[in-house]
Picture 1 (tube, rainbow over the protein chains, first blue to last red):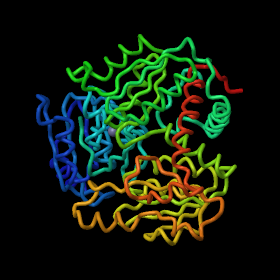
Picture 2: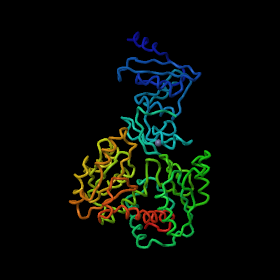
Picture 3: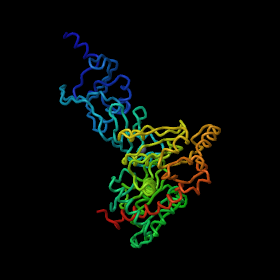
Picture 4: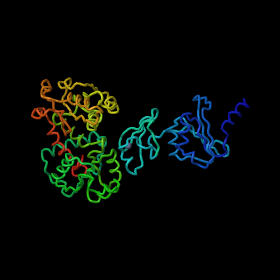
Length: 155
Length: 305
Ligand SMILES: [Zn+2]
């Protein structure tokens, strides 16, 4: 038992300080890395995918040393990996743990899918209302058109 | 309603809509009243729409307001790359209300958020045209003496027509039964049908215009545009099968009235123009009274009790 858990931990090492994003759907792992610009930062980043998960079968996980995410970044994670759990680690101890949550309104981070929307032609921060959190649908505050999950692009 | 913008028909409550219609009725009886003498209305048409602009300008002039603005962005600093925000902030120094039409969806909502004076949306791309919707409601109520429990047919391009979408959504407040006549490729989008379903109202879909003519109180005709069809032959076929003629009206209800947002191309035969059931020219005239009511309400000249 003890042996097994040690082996499990070794798959993706523990971090001293920073954030763990757990329970990411494997197919969304690289998207999460991309939208958080983790390929551009100087912090230590560890990630694994297709790891066994009791809850979801397979999962992805990302650990970022010495980095704590802003709420806009957490909203982005929620949009592409709604099952993810955010764990904040300080001194090897979990100080905060919570499932990410899709907010009712999404400010600034998503582009409107409608090419003729005013937000795609002028320097205007976007705003969306979340119509459906399960089968993700966002309604643009400006053009009133709907952007669906597969059409979501980040600003 | 004083100082409120009108961007989407859903910005106004049911009571506010009825207030506008009641006030428009008073303007129909007395169209010339100098109640907006000290106001300046600007009409900013970033894309041309002569019909809508003249209707607003006529409404403002009949009430004594002065009108400034442009009818085409080509002759303005917009052409030089000025942002919408800068245009709106500049013009708002010179007027008390902005009436704007713009080719991009969401432009009017955005303008209303940066503008210190109220904004009336006279069409933002394919999105909203609330004053058209209000004049349609006015025309329906005027000809049927009520908005409640009517059978209303929409004919033609139900997929792309923003006029149809707004009016269908607005009518779901009045227990309407909807008859939707269109070629299969131009059916009403499911997002709009959802509003009908949410209110548990009935709707029927048809491809043949002859099937509905005898069943309804209002026949709302729309134009089918060539650019919606990849195949020009298919367009010809569809266009010719959605033409309203006097023969089709033979067995229609006595109270039936025909509406059309205009301009018309070939979807209503000119013979129908003299039919007492044709109402589309009066409908356009009603637009002036409705816009008089909207301008007066927003400028605070007719307070809502
Ligand atoms: Zn938009």
